[in-house]
Amino acid sequence: MAGGVLTLGQFIGGPDSVKVEGAFPSTQKTYQYNFNGSINGWTFLLDYQTVVVDTISYTRDGEPNFTDSQVIGFFPKGVVNTSTYINVISTSLGTVNVTHPSGLYPEANGILPDSRKNVPLLVMSLHWTDSATPPVTNIHRIAKILSWEPGVLAQDPTTITTTNYTSVVVGS
Image 1 (cartoon, rainbow, N blue to C red):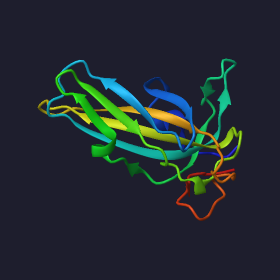
Image 2 (cartoon, rainbow, N blue to C red; image 1 turned 90 degrees about the vertical axis):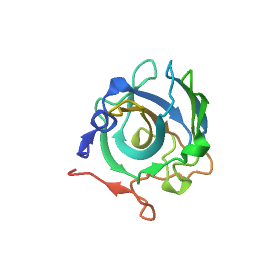
Image 3 (spheres, rainbow, N blue to C red; image 1 turned 120 degrees about the vertical axis):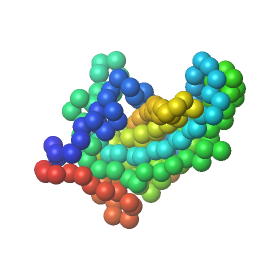
């Protein structure tokens, strides 16, 4: 197994604070956040980065297990258009709809069909800063295990030289 610089838990901030789900690159999904109070004066930012982990195993219940997963590379970080994909439903009640748009992982980056090796993981991070003095910023992350679908290049994302993939492997 190749030696990565970080475990997946180190990259995403610990396993207890991150929701993990499966998705296709073409999936768009909206999540509703309820802050249970006024969010007047708050600001929001939604960014993302795809990392590649060397291996993913699964429990008997089908849940992903990242205990032995190492981050072996990444694609450039991006920022989602806040005015398009973050919709404050109620400032007084603190209800916000956050949409994770499709297409954040380009099809040309490649995914191995039915793979547990060199798996792209799209990590979405919602940042919110309140209006307190001093302001406090919190982050919620959702990691999406990306699966191959028709239209996506059926290839190992770590071997494609025409993308912006950066390897962080330190040994073999």
